[in-house]
Length: 292
Image 1 (cartoon, one colour):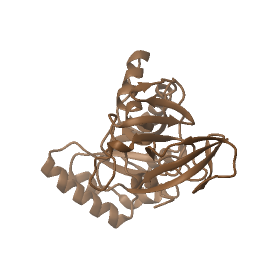
Image 2 (image 1 turned 120 degrees about the horizontal axis):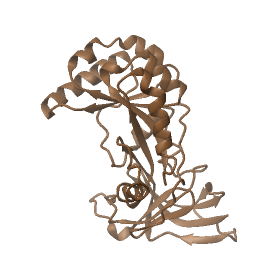
Image 3 (image 1 turned 180 degrees about the vertical axis):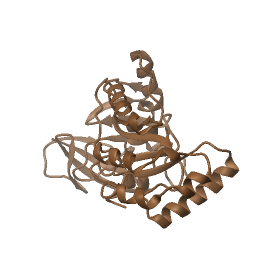
């Protein structure tokens, strides 16, 4: 056990100063101070602490070890990312199990944790696909939108029935021009709101920290994106001197990241990375939208 003193924890654009008692790589207790405990202490008053980031990655990582290593370092580890949402693509229902198996195999040596999603054209969504997602605990479906017809003609009532009770979340991906995209997004939200289909209202940029509200909807929070009692000790440290936002908030980029701690171990420190192949594991999401 050890104590992290004077941690400036920033979450949801709010900052609080607290001390943490760490046991078995989890936050065991949080108080203003632990004056009567004789454990090893680490003072972090000169840093801002945040949870490690969760980012979407819709492309398959390179298969070669060196290429995969550099891919994860450049896109995730140097940015303080401890978890990715990694999608496999299908065009037909009978590809689901095969492509899921390939995706899981490709991530065996991942240095960070991952949540597996599926990506497919809107026209290919069916009650069968939804049931496969429920059976295999796939909480996120990235939906490629190309036109209005499939949105309007899709039997959403059947889709909604098939989703219950796991309720995988639909996330739009737009392949059309900007003007059409805006109109598609409007129709997407109108129809899915009306049908009460669990969905995200806009695209999620790849390799960019996912907002907490979406992590909650996906069911990833509080497994990730949280620093509270019971949380695994995954955090980023940023130098206070690098506060550049007029509200006192940090612009979280790799140039300002001091340290990334993953499962209690330092992974990134001042642009240096300790690469641990296979250190990551698949996060199984038992239910979505619990904290929405």
